[in-house]
Length: 90
Image 1 (cartoon, rainbow, N blue to C red):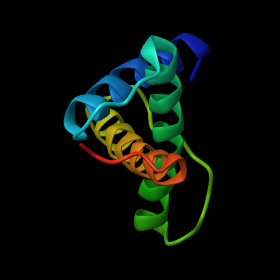
Image 2: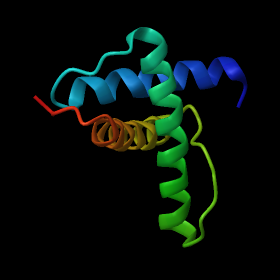
Image 3: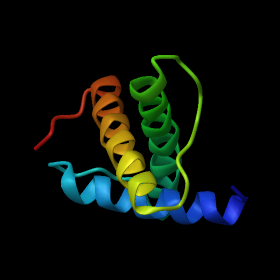
Image 4: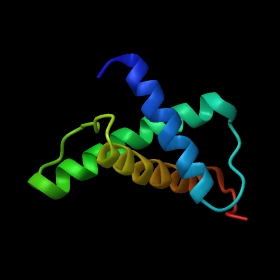
């Protein structure tokens, strides 16, 4: 997937994850894109693990299931980031 598609997928997944996750997450547009890209890798890797039972660093494609995996991964990334920075959910 080219870099523009990564940015678009990151923006979509990060924005949806920030809208779903409770509380305030700062970072602006760049933080949202990076969160979404990290989420795409986390979600893609979880998708590969659950389908093939092997661990591999993978990313989903720019499709509806790919966006769903990326959003799931971005929500996990927000949760872990909040744990690491000791921010509360509210």
